[in-house]
Length: 411
Image (cartoon, rainbow, N blue to C red; front, side):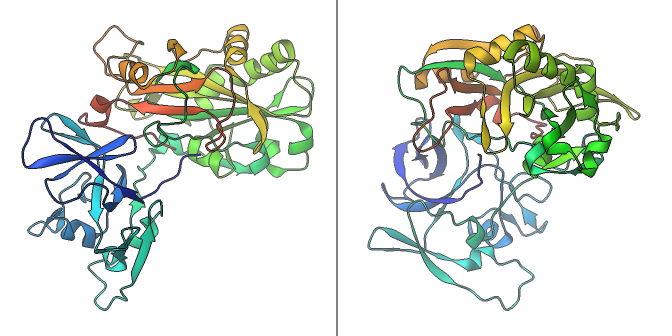
């Protein structure tokens, strides 16, 4: 599961190939451009990733403050969001905060005054030591940026039930660069820029007696109910009202007959038991027709003039007590149930070079020049990593991260 962290890290410093006054700090698979000489090799610092929202005091301390306009100089109207940029041709994903002092070389000293807002005239300031790996986001008052969800994506909530939904997310490969072994067989698919859709069919033993079930359609003849939700709502156990046809997620589920196709997959392809839920996850993208006129689901529409959908995962069972269908079975089920799938770009031995080769470039969905968001890498055998669990990760294109007019994935 993806987590937001501002971690204490040990920094590796390398020269910038195109500049003398700045250099590159390497943090695992990520890198950030820093002022030359500000950080010593192996020094402990705080890595703040892209999409972080910085408080006033950090913006001011690091020189990201425009006093004349009383705002930050970073991204968004408030100028307080960290965004990936290119400096002299090199991608920088995040910023580094220098500690106030080192303690024995193994700890860094930080002050909670970083998290103090300008309105706090008499704040209580704390000094605290942190070790490598500690998450200090809360201590420093740093939060994750969440985009406002457009009205046509919000929808009406039918109810809540953690047993009838799944929390879906995964990390970037740069955060866990050792997730895959060199030579391990993987499938690399194109990552599409839309919004995650979760559709499920839920057996009677879970929905019986629940008020939300009255709003959900009957699926098949074995007593299943159909649910639909988004990424963020599904994580929190919330389901959308399937009768709200104006909602993007509901419209997509019905437009592509996803409940019926799941039931077909359950009964005719998988021979799935009558007491186990089955979920499909995919990307809804393109253009939606709304009362206010056509709206791009994101700023990348892939040449579509209607809503499009492509699946990338199937899950059998309940939250934390089920499994994702392994590679070959996923493709087989989707093919036989006529479920559209994301494009597969590569199948073969894993290497960082292979991932880099497929991460950038144009999308495969349209002949028009249209950048690719990135890729998703999955282990073909489905064997879990002893530390990180399921071997699935994303690799995002630098061109995508630094494009103008960007939007972020809605929950």
